[in-house]
Image (cartoon, rainbow, N blue to C red; front, side, top):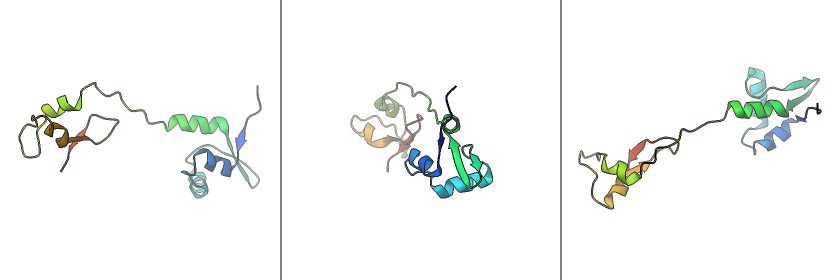
Length: 109
């Protein structure tokens, strides 16, 4: 069994490309949320295996999109004015994808 690897607070901040600050980690520790940590005296260390497990628990998995071309979706859609969006190039002007992880469309103004 290999020795466990621990990261310091600054290393954890760097690991998450400064998107999680030292203050955020401090708040999470006080609320007992976020990645698990080890406290030895004043030193706070984060086991690498715990960070990897925390990453997996917070992974956002998008569902697969149906292979439906936007033109076909637009042809079956209605504009905000109540008419069908069926005229050639204007089809693409009506719709835009709001969320790349879903098949939700939104009308352009």
